Image 1 (cartoon, each protein chain N blue to C red):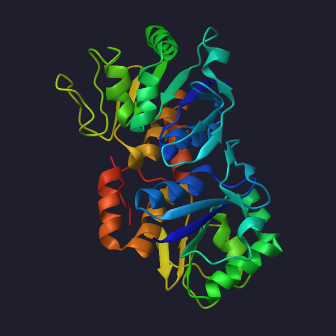
Image 2 (image 1 turned 180 degrees about the horizontal axis):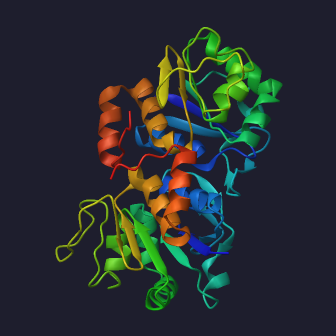
Image 3 (image 1 turned 135 degrees about the vertical axis):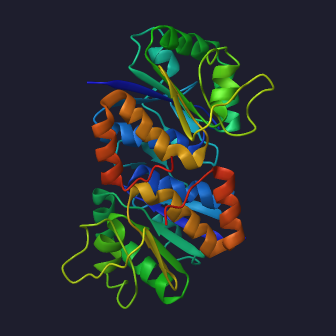
Length: 184
Length: 184
């Protein structure tokens, strides 16, 4: 069975956090929702979640097949300031396993850690720094890096994660079953 | 300030529950996430939420400007079996205030309570009963009733709720700011 960790911090964006959990679980992936500092997180618009685990429970363990970092400005800032998360994501990226991020997190987390260097990627327009070059597209896949633009792209982002882990037929079936339209 | 209650039960669908909370709060609506039997709910794909209130806290009180019922087969069944919720939603409908539902809930909750009678509405294809007539469209608005088809329509459903409460400019601005595409 494929495995995924979706990280959440205080201030992570609601739909960007839960669309990947929802769609990956629908596709049969074993997903753990991982709180950055605690299992209890309050998302960017006040929704309170109880995560499955916290980062300290998994940081030294086996890597999952995919990790996902939702956006939300405050949540992305929390992610960026965590050395434990940086070490984990760097280990994931270096292993060739899948790394994904959406909205503020590709620019404010992955790019600032140098993890996007040499890769095609995107983020929420305006979150990029002066030196960042964004690729066109609502979702951009380059090797083991999957990035997407913002909350309105959450369902397409989640489908792209399913496609990367489970194949294009699984993603097409899920899009049809959930009535999700990919805007391209 | 406009007000909305989004209801959640064990088995409610994740994105259908939280996209309305997220987008309505972005638009400045005062949203309460209301657990049917408890503030603690476990959604259809295992995500655990702590709601703001539970139904018994608000059942006799002032009606909000809008109520939303997410789908999820188990969640819709929980909604349908609650006489307290039926009384609340019937009072909301009779008052002319906005009632909305998505996926399984228009058919398995509102139609079974007789609340869709004489209205145009839709639901997840196949959830309707033999006597139900569904209208075309991913989101259907008829007077104070707003219904939508399924999880992949959640963001468009949330935008339709914003439009109904806050006007078309607010909905257009929110679609642009969140990069949400309406499939039509």
